[in-house]
Image 1 (cartoon, protein in one colour):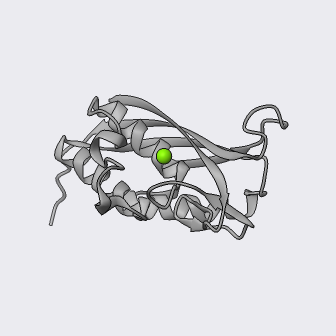
Image 2 (image 1 turned 135 degrees about the vertical axis):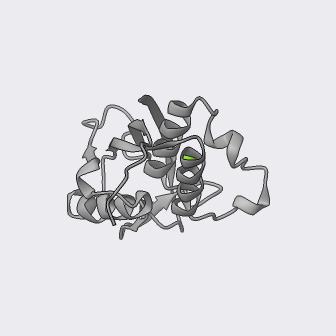
Length: 162
Ligand code: MG
């Protein structure tokens, strides 16, 4: 088994969509960034790359590359999942914490979990997404952060009888 952690923060800005774990959340501001700025998926990818000791998403998807401008982070995640597969690893489980003063995220959590389970082709029970505020003391509504912990398991060959 391999374990990794990821952390990311993006600033809230006018005229941007707010996308978290591939879910578009109605809000007057969205996250600024070169890609779609899905901070939760960025933390998740960094945790996976950390588990594999393969660097980080800045190394894999440099923001100096125009190819990644406005990129759908779920598509980048699919590439990281493929890379993990090539290394012989599949997801054991992941636990993501989104740090946001606002908006309220509770009603979107299940959709986020389903999106990620779809990306990994795994049971939703392997995916945890949580949200917390920092009581106005940390990012204070100026941005949204995310932390992720990922456990990857060596893929085992399962033999089934025909
Ligand atoms: Mg990022």
